[in-house]
Length: 335
Image (tube, rainbow, N blue to C red; front, side, top):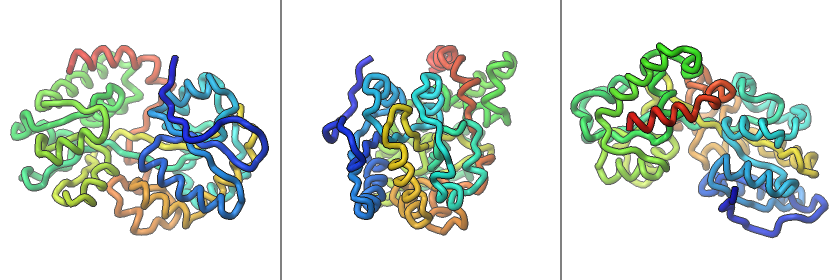
């Protein structure tokens, strides 16, 4: 498998005068870089940045270039995939005391983390509406099926998240679908009902924002952080909603590749990142909520913020991943 990873500097070498970070690129990368630079100024250790387009690309890079990454940002799905290939280092949370002290305990204990990841933030996938065009109150996944949205709805082109949100819409848990054929049929029926209004599907978050910005869509499945950025660009009439049933979740988690030889230096960097003031600044720059203790308004006011992780849907990838190809085939038929 080839990779289109973008290299920002020379890889390889020895010593702890630098560490190598692999992230998502864009605003996510830039926000982390600003916090990392503060640490570099104190530690005299450079952070060399690389970026990749997604979990699969990152994991491919791990496999082909063992030892060339010291810290990485993966989603919960990426953590699952990397774990299957024994690509992650087991971590000692006591080496990063600020993580335990400054992150809310209930978010540290997410079930997909098995002593190999540091939770950072969660992106939600609810929907955004054009309040200039939408007259009715919007609070549920059921609301997007209203007749007035025929041909005015955009949904995400991703089987796992669509199954997750369709299951939520009928009050069910996505993780129960693989073992329940009747539930599978019910969720597919809900998918079909939601897609009846859809004129298009988006693969990248920027596409959803374009649909809303150009008024092609009155309602679009979306991410809160993307919607916040659109509001900051002057589109204050675009409003983000986490439906009352909940929303699919995408996490961002720091991991240390198993082949890194700079684990102790990475621990030092992470302990700096998880200082409360740095987490607050990082969350504000990202536009996604980091669940710090005594959460300030600058975070609680973010569109994706929820008090309790149980307000969101969390995919158990060990259960869902084995059936994902089948779900994709069904989803393609629905589309």
